[in-house]
Image (tube, rainbow, N blue to C red; front, top):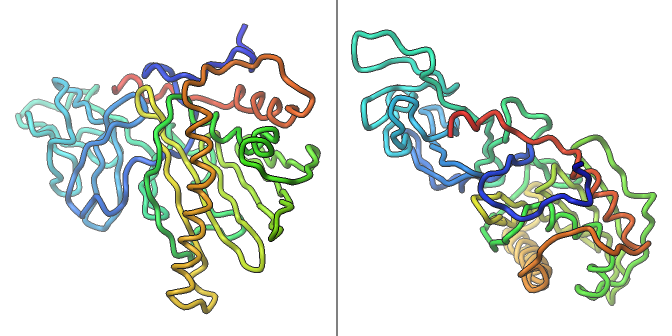
Length: 319
């Protein structure tokens, strides 16, 4: 019987992944009318931009004879296979073949719901999004200056990293943070979002306002005399999870460009400080829920939440 106690955190490149919004590529990698290929989850995807600027993400295996569609081109906003010129619209439906034959009924590819946000292209792992794309805690996604970067690679599922938010032993004794907490204040907003606020007792006290979206993304606003905003997310690719950090700051509050840059650099330094310890301590992890402590109750509740999170099988027939 599957329970949260026997969840697997390792990645074998075969298992179904949670229905989350995952980063596919940097937005500036893609120009209008261009197509690029990316490894994504357990498959290969083609990413292209229509003439209007809209991004499309599809599985990259042509249903005709298995060619890589990311090596094709974009013609009239449709993805055309380089091998035999089968053409697919943004919904993954084949619209034309290079002969007088009718389009075969099985000539389809999987089209992921996708969005461009914070300088990144995100795709939802499912036929229809169960929840909106990640936003900055307290600030949404508009009127923000941002800088996104790829950071580290981990050999386990994304939810292990996200679970550190609720691993108060880890925060105290590995990161050396001092704080009081109340498990009852952790707010499970719905099936897909969690929020929490923690007051850290340091030389310069601050509050961290946290929002979890899905099992792979955490947004946090660090509040002192000002607000520093960050977002951390992971995308599983094959047997590894690739992490991205986004530093953000409001773009409409009168700050000079120099002040905005200072805030972005502070957020990047803050994220790097946490990641150094996480990379060190998570290397070689073989996850299991073992001899847990009473102080682990917030973490155990999170594991239960992860265990019931929906996964997607919809794209498997197209891989």
